[in-house]
Figure (cartoon, rainbow, N blue to C red):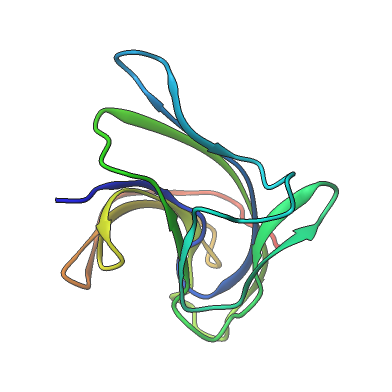
Length: 146
């Protein structure tokens, strides 16, 4: 079973993501890191959306479509990892169920855990199994674009 460590953006919000880092907690060795300063997103698999490396103060990996379910995934078969990412929502789609966030322990594009920001000022920890979504926890958090 393939488990990818991290994905850059979830759902259809315009988002800029930087500093993707995955470490194995038992060994504290960096397994994967990409801050996109090399100007490319080599090693990332994209599904939906419109992805590109652009300048936003520094080079970032941006998904600029708000009309489709979009994900970018990188990683390998790792266990016991931790992930860090900076995510900035730039705009939300017309639907209130749009999210932007980070995926972890992804088996494929429809089975993963996520930590996401919502346009209705929530942070949500959830899982997607066989395409269905479940909220594991949520909390209020003021979320603004830009």
